[in-house]
Amino acid sequence: MRTSLEYQLRRTAVEFLDNRDRLTAQFYELSRYINIFATKKLVPEVNGDGIPEQVEEELERVSETPFRMFLGERAHAKAFMRAVIWRFLCIEFLENPFNLWGKGDEIGSALARVQCECLDPGSLYELYPGKLTIKLAGEFGGDDRILSIWRAYTAEILFNNPIDEVKLRTYKDKLLQLVKPFVCEKYEDEIDAESEATVNKIVGSAIVLARHLNRYEDRMEITRKGPSDTSDTSQYYDEEWMHICKLRVGDCDGVELLIRPALILRGKPDGSDVECANVARKAYVSYGDEPK
Image (cartoon, rainbow, N blue to C red; front, top):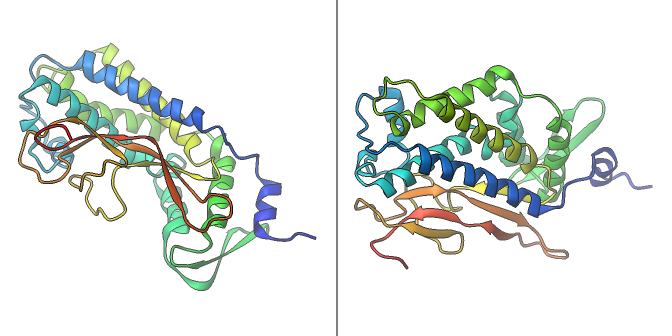
């Protein structure tokens, strides 16, 4: 009689998704919405005047190059606007889709710790009291194969649960405030109804992508940095998962601007203990003085 945890998970969970082309298409659709918004809604001249301090602080975090340097030329302003939107979506829920559920980030934080936190060998975590006990051990919290199955299983449980309406409205309002300098002649102006509807569509598309992201047995990740990078504003250029689509405007030595993150599949081929990364969509970056 099979009693392994893996067998319990496979019996209990809904069948895991395996059509990765569908997820790639969802990623592409979100990217297209963001590109169209940046192209059609960018005002003729972006000067960045009158921006509230908290919004300005968020814009400064997008790149080590002062954000106003991107605003002087339309193509760079458009790329920066795309970077602002992608960074916001990644931080809020694309990098940890479990953040979508609950009124705050408590569920996402707890589930992220189960997947990533270093635990002492032999630690026991009762994730579903009375139903399932998972033994987690090892450098990153245990057998990564079991944790991958557990992650996909948990995503299946949460998939059809509604997202809190207040949280959803907060996502949309925060993004509207961030893009306001790019779509309004003056920050105090009202965002037009069409722009607001497009922002709602962007958030909705990102949520569809995020809800599916963890449902695959192999890890599908939206990535903004390499394994050795500690900052999301500057990093080494890596042609394996990056594509240069804009030259730099400042004197940043590393990647000056991550315009769009990468979509990467991580998994172990059958019979192998070595994890491989398959880049489904490369990140778009601003880097260098001339194309490589």
